[in-house]
Image (tube, rainbow over all chains, first blue to last red; front, side, top):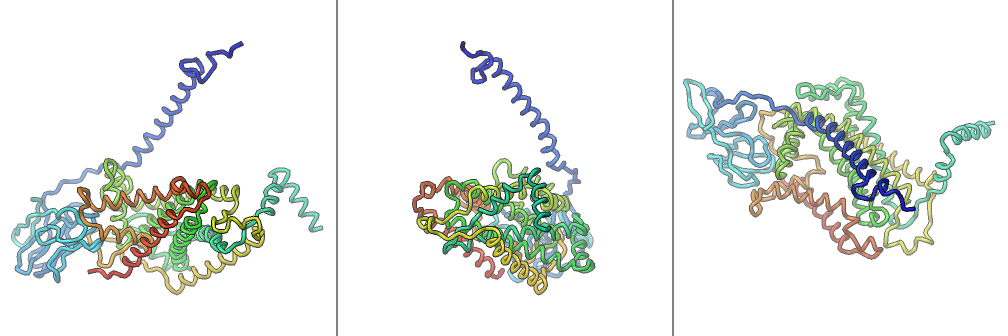
Length: 152
Length: 362
């Protein structure tokens, strides 16, 4: 006698085939519903952050000419430079390469990233090294004795 | 009397656990002796150093605090206030470095001696996974003291995944626990370092060791024709005692280094300080770091760091797949191409590491 066709798991559309798919599908569904919340849990929730358009980066007499300092622009570092001429420049201090914090090098008159030797000029443009893009430029205004930096 | 008690205990165990099967296996286990036998010791050496890490790591856990506010101070407390804290922390740090070095040596010797060839493909695959896990331990562990150097190394290292197309930014956020390296990153790295990686490592290590027991030691192709006449050393106790002698030496070295060259703690990480001059990662990431430094900002139409990252990713994948790619070794033939590729890879890593070490920052 031929084996019962309905019990042959190989045969498409048989009862056994259907039950195997049902079992496999349910197992996959269960796994999915267990893993989904766990994966979502790993992704950190977005923290609402006050969107700053300008900050006070320092006092006017604080920086000697040809030096720079890091200031807080919200949660990110910014770089304020006082040129030898006394003029101020401000940039995002986050290197466009791999997000190290850059610094002003008075001896070179350049903005320098110590991590991978990236160099920018005083307009934030890349001079040499691996950075793929210029630094974000901020505008600087003097309000009484405070240096106010704002996003352009 | 003593013999009687011993056989009683043995019988008791055997009835429940069939220990005699294991004992007779151990009695038959032998290690082939030939001119490349020295390389058989390095895997065990890495294993020994791993166990040092487990013990010292658990000890450090007693005082370490994984938050951005307290991590640096807690390590400071360990090395200044806790009795022998300076020793335990320094041993953990030195043994980590030595372990990475031993894993490198073990893996490269297996690569050059073609011990990955059939039927040991899965031993190789698990071994490469253990190598990656070891690097993961090093990467996650170096952030834990929360000093400036580690802070920026982590910034760069985690920033690299951002260059992966499509999912890169998601991966970055998952790794850092946010957009930036913060206390959230420290907590994630801590969990990785003391829970996730140890569990994964134990599982893969168990498989790796089991496979070695199943297949025995590989004999290199160059001496394979003498395998029948080859002298063999019983594993227990002869080889194991030699192993133990090596471990004792390594332990002495680690303690000596820890005492005379204690690892510095550095300066507490400040997210609002510029990256200090002369910054560089741990020596075992130096070749990647130097490559990143030398890569141009754009290669064809792609960003330089993306190309570098994808290339290293491909190399890592290639490393895992070596036994399946090297068809000649699989057939038992000589495979000069893979020897040449391996030597090229070693030369590249050594050169870039030296360059990265010697080049003074501008």
